[in-house]
Length: 216
Image (tube, rainbow, N blue to C red):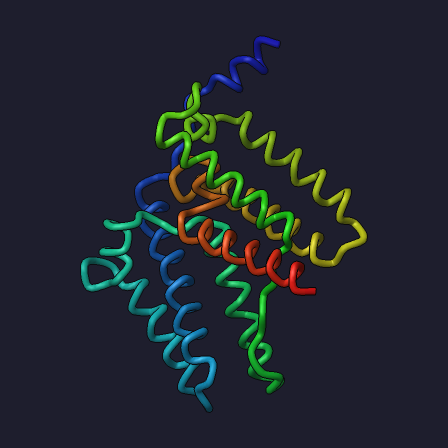
């Protein structure tokens, strides 16, 4: 029991400065590249691929010449979930382009969108000091990681017959694995799972799904 208590009360593990800087650069490179790929979905030939590669290389360039430098000053870093979703979207869109099947879409499960939306509102309430103790500070503790692993196991179990649930379960497992190995982007689990832009997109996806359900 003393070992468990000492482990739960241990100081938070934070990423090293070098890992944080390169992790933030890579995250912004994936996000910006996905944005360019989405905007250039109608381009023909290699123009789209060249633009995506150029934006990624430009973003990975060290120093103030990189857009990641200024984006990190304004918005810090995208979450690991956003980065991996953008990487997955880039890969799937590239595969679709090779097969000439048109634009690839990445659906968002309603339950996951609802959970992400709820987590975002809880964190917003924490920012406004509505809750005691701090929910955000809890994200630095091993207890938050244990809770996330438990929720992941529940998702995999109840969604074992759903291909969509299994895909998103694998994505969340990858997010948690990268977080444990690198502690990116800030050492806080909530920053790895969610960021304001992803929270906004999850709410829009949830509202769209609800609207379509009402219409049908």
